[in-house]
Image 1: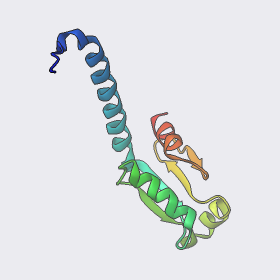
Image 2: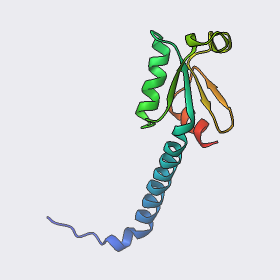
Image 3: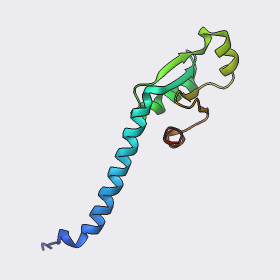
Image 4: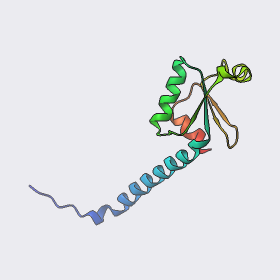
Length: 110
């Protein structure tokens, strides 16, 4: 048996869904625009830093700068026990580990 469904009956629902999709895409684009000004303070052989990098990659934030804190005594003193740490260069806000994808998105949107 074949049933015919009139698309026009669902136009409000479709419009709502498309609006939500567009809103999410705009948020992703905004995050990626900001990714040029993100530092990830890290050290080599740090599994938590690897996890943080994976989160950024999962969110498709490719243009972030990894800062090796062992290259600077000041950075080592500041971030040595807190890494990984994300920092926005536009306002110097920091997000210290532990964080997840949702927290990173919120951090970049604020």
